[in-house]
Amino acid sequence: MIGRFANELGASMQGPAILIGEQLGLYKALSASGPVTSEELAKKTGLAERYIREWLAGQAAGGYVNYNAASGKYMMTPEQSFTLANEDSPVYIPGAFYLISSIYKDRSKIADAFRSGKGIGWHEHHNDLFIGTHKFFRPGYLANLVSSWLPSLDGVLKKLKDGATVADVGCGYGSSTVIMAKAFPKSQFFGYDYHLESIEWAKDVAVTEGVSSNTTFEVALAKNYPRKDFDLVTFFDCLHDMGDPVGAAKHVHQSLKPDGTWMIVEPYANERVDENINPIGRVFYNASSMICVPASLSQEVGLALGAQASDSKLREIASAGGFKQFKRATQTPFNRIFEARP
Ligand SMILES: C[S@@+](CC[C@H](N)C(=O)[O-])C[C@H]1O[C@@H](n2cnc3c(N)ncnc32)[C@H](O)[C@@H]1O
Image (spheres, rainbow, N blue to C red):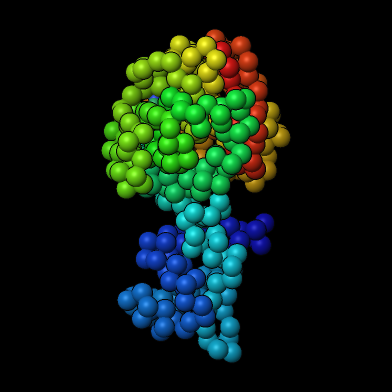
């Protein structure tokens, strides 16, 4: 237990240091420069050398950069650069630490909720949660959504290529919406989320990413977003955060064309708790108790599915919403992708 504790303590201490590295562009500068001393990296980044020297030693001790004692230089291997300096890589690590940072900042509020049983709305969290969710999830969407998740759904890819109408519900900062809008310029995408700040951010991203002509972002609840006759409705990592997922499922059902598809992306989980006692379950159950369960409890009904809701529970929700077909279409080590058809 003591050996394990030393590792856990080091990893926890590494978290804020990773955020400092991200925020100040240190990983990107080190990755681009090749082997450098702390003086050279400080000069390149315009930062204070004494701080950089200590930060680099901590990174080397954590295995996040390499140190050559003979030359006194630090460098990053391709694997370290891939995970720490490349925001588009499928396994970009720093985003997750913004999300974790929000939990530390909201800890008192969360402890109060444990006492009272009341919820905490997504919008009531520190801003680090929103930016962290965006930075943590976007790399997985970039890597998988167009190349593997959408093709796993029956007939959806062709419709998107030809020109479909799509609702992306609980879209947050709109990373999934923008990725799809870029890949399928003939289709129209409507991003909905109840969180005003996220919708404002998504609108700005649509402009900078050049997809404002085929995206519309609006503040709306999953239970009452406007428009009908969608070919595809997507829910990325948000169904379990909702208070009334059955109400949402019913609304999706009536908003789809008769041959439409509801795509639900949820965190990877097995059927039973004892099957989720593993490193992935550890991440998701902990995030769930401090973010997802309180989010759901803050809303009408407050079903609180939790981030490890089983396939059979999700099937029940879809069926209660009126969907006749439901299957797990594909998966990654972190995600399950479901297809529900009317
Ligand atoms: C974990 S975030 C996922 C955001 C985004 N889909 C992504 O993958 O980056 C959950 C999102 O669901 C939204 N949300 C929660 N309950 C909602 C509801 N009832 N109606 C609409 N949006 C909701 C939150 O505001 C938040 O943006």
